[in-house]
Figure 1: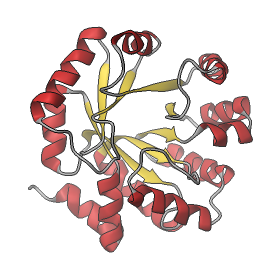
Figure 2 (figure 1 turned 180 degrees about the horizontal axis):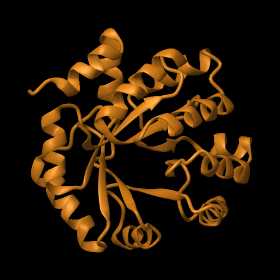
Figure 3 (figure 1 turned 30 degrees about the vertical axis):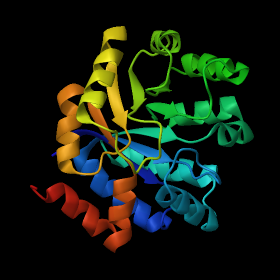
Figure 4 (figure 1 turned 180 degrees about the vertical axis):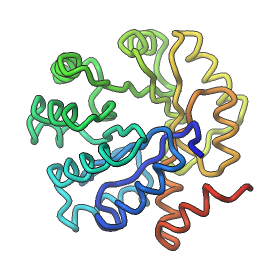
Length: 242
């Protein structure tokens, strides 16, 4: 049964065949899937994600191969797919070409965490996303000043990608109260969905996050589970009632 989560995979890790098996499993349980186009130096990621990116690149996984993978799966699966990558990938592919291609294969939106909204390149991105009617998701963190948060929310019309703490994707926030107050603060700015990224590791974490936010985003733990014994362990995670 699908859950209020967005799961994550690195395209081509550990290889393209296993990525296909994994996305088929994630399609059963996720409302959204975030597919990462591998990049040589992903920011804010625990080594487990960095290693996955490096392995995918060693497998010669290019943006074009990722688009082939994505197109196959937007046609064959019923889960909404977003692309997560870094601006240099988009730039080298060709910004408009990248966005147009994504729209043609029914991608729902982009997460490009190294492109802040006040950079001039961002304006080109957002204008082209509007032209092709595709979402550019904003990332917010607990250290964002109130003024910047309001600006980020003002340009968001679907959801914001809320980092639960300024640390890597493996670590936890200090206390539940800190987290709950942070989400309440965000919800008071604008009536928009809040999706929480970082430290979601267990089914209980998913349940707890969704008590105060709208979606949980599961990253590093899925890769760690995958590393144990391939895709079957990921399916076991979702089927386990604990």
